[in-house]
Image 1 (cartoon, rainbow, N blue to C red):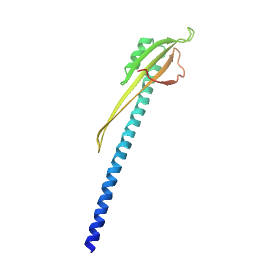
Image 2: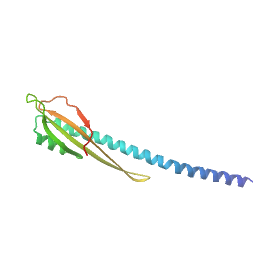
Image 3: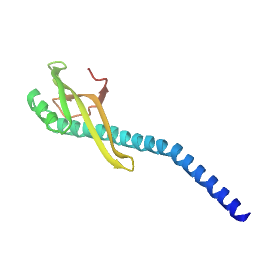
Image 4: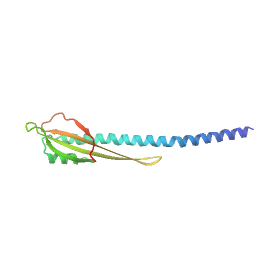
Amino acid sequence: MWLRRGLAVAALAAVLAVIGVVAGLPLLRDRSQQRLEQRAEREVTATAQLARARLLADPGAGESTLRQAAGSVAGVEVLTVRGDGPASAPAVRLVFRVRVTKTAASVFGWQRADASACFAQVVHAEAGPAALERLSCPD
């Protein structure tokens, strides 16, 4: 009698454990993927900030020098560079795309997250504050 009850309880526990694993694994995988995607987004922003710092390091540089400065950052693709502003306060406006791919090993195998965003930075000839603007990317 005790043996039957013990086996029944063990079988019920095993069934509940299997149901828990089957229901829980997809949730854990989704959460792990979400965290990887968030890390990729943070890296996109950090890379854009690095490109911004390189652009603002030499505000009096010409368009080609600024294009090279932004393009030297890994993951940055310069889309457009154009002179902007009045002649009394010349400026260069750069639009660039940042792409990041993150991979990570997990109990579910390799996971991958791709993130990209476009930004605009206006570099004035004179040093001063300049905001980094996030844009929607062209196709």
